[in-house]
Every structure is written in C-alpha cells, then in structure tokens.
Length: 278
Image (cartoon, rainbow, N blue to C red; front, side, top):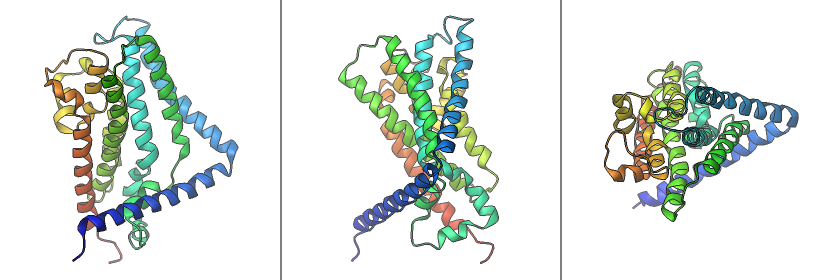
C-alpha cells in the first residue's frame, strides 16, 4: 500500500528542486547583464522610497497619525514592505497566470513532469525585487533605532515570527489570487488589491481606518496578522478592537490557515481548467 505521507514528501522535494533550478536559470540570465540588473534593482528601490516619503510629508504637519508616532508608523511600513517584498520575490510571478490561461501557454506547463505550482512560482524569477526588501529593511532599522524598545526573548521571537508568517500569508494570497484566475482570467487586479493594496494599508496604523475594515483584515483575509497585531505586542500598544490578547501571537495559525485555503483553491483551479485545445 502506498504511503500518502511519503508520497507527499517526495512531491514537495521535487517541487523545491524544480523551483530552485528554475530560479537559478533566471538569476543567471539576469546577472548576464549586470548593468541592467543593478539599474533595475536601484530603480525598484527608488520607487519604494516614494511610499515612505509620503508618510514623512504627513508628519511634517502633525506629530502623530492615529495616535502613532513616526518611528512606530515606520515600524509598520518596514515590516509590511519586507514581508510583501519577500513574498513578491518568491511567488510574485504567479500574478500573470490569467495571461497564460487566456493565451493557452499554461498547457505547456501542465504537460511537464514537474508540479505546475513550482514552475509558475519560479517563472521569470526577478532578483531585482530585492530592492523593495532592502529599502524596507533600512526604514525598519531606522525605526528600531528610534523606538528605544526594551527587548525580551518573547519580543524577538514575535519579530522573527512576524517576518516569516507575514511572508507566508502574503505568499498564500498570491497563490490563492492566482488560482482564482483559473475561474476569472481577468482577475489580476483583484489579486493586486489584496497584495499590493493590502501592504499599503498595513503601512498605516489600524486606528486611522474604520473598525469594520480592520475587522475584515482579522476575520476575512487575515492581513492584520502580518504586522498590525504582532506590532501591538512589540510596541506595547493597546488593541483598538479589544480582541483577545492571544490574537497578537496567532500569526502562525493565520499563516497555516492561509496556506491551507490557498492550497485548496489552487487544487480546485487546476482541476477546473479546460484547455482550448481539449
């Protein structure tokens, strides 16, 4: 009798190996033209800087935004940018799935003896997207230097969890949104509203948004677990929604739920796909 756990492990290892090989191919291709690579990387970084410039301009006219100081908002900006940037780097290419469905090129992906998810996630891997991560990391470093936090092992653990789980949550949204394009091929903008739009929203304090919107990021698409809720613990702030205290540490559970939901949606999308040539 076949061992389901063993078969799943083999599939995951094959997927990771295929993903690594494709990433290596696209990275070598990008580095073959170093001048172009560095220009696009710095261009990506410069474009991200403008987001924080907008926040800095706001603080030229006020001392606090929704009760949050500039270093605290910079903390949200940095963590939001790092987690989105890493997810975008790892699986961001999947937002072009709708184009592949429309032109039929996804057929060539599905007939290869490699999991389609690994192929599409690594397709056109763009190392230049690290620019957003580096720029957001610099803002986060400035924030931490000015917050004067009293670090404890628990806070350090929450920070590590924030980066890992936030990346996984955004990655799951990328995969789930892409799978939705099997059903609605023109839905790329809907996906972008949850990924890039969600990351922009997380750059600002939850207190500047209506409570119903914040509840939607907790009980709907759980983007609040990316940085809002962990930040309340790290920064020692009160919860504007009065949620249970353990919600601040529930990012791993939210990430696990997002991965499960994205996996189910992806499987449903693959099974529903009908090639125009079939």
